[in-house]
Length: 307
Image 1 (cartoon, rainbow, N blue to C red):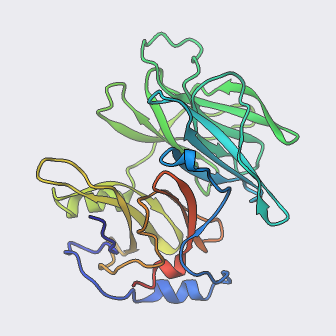
Image 2: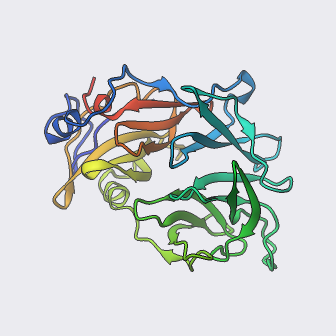
């Protein structure tokens, strides 16, 4: 069962239109008017159904990156790119990152000079015995990316995922233990010639808050911070047998040290098993991957209007 709520302080599931200053502040922004969720980025083929994952735009908004499953193996991924030309996105093309390896989670640097990604290519000096995805980057040369370089902030044998750049330019990522029992967040920075050592990042406050308040019947996967103290919190139901339903996103706004009351989200964001959500740079849209099959966006103001 899918359900959409705006998470609130210690509350049960409630219904009602979104209220308060969030909507009024966003309505004052010069955002284009939209009509619910719409396709964004390249059109995907029927053969891609259930195989596409997270997406990201280049800093200038002219390149769209994503990764998808390409082979029968459980972790056989490749990174693809689409270019914007005359208002249209080109067909996606396989990105040549040097060698035939499983690559995932592309993250262009804010200055557009580097593309960081996770990869299963052999990590230099790795004797851990655990094949896993480590951190790499390539540099811009004209319109292409060249010279794959290992990022030594990687931890040998651990799985590195969820790469994204924060507003301050740092790169945030998840690090999962080889036994897949524990995941923590870290960040690194570019220091003119190389990436810094990894620093542990505190757990996301919205995700931690709702893990404490929703109880055992709900599972909080994580949260994505947005404008004006808004957070997208990904939640699923937990059945009696321990199985979790498809995760969906909820909106919550920080108010003091707590989070706003429950209100339903709108704009069609709850349709098609949304995943890998992110806010556009101008805070006008929420982008997401729909049912691991296509890329969509929905105006944030419509999400907050309720339904």
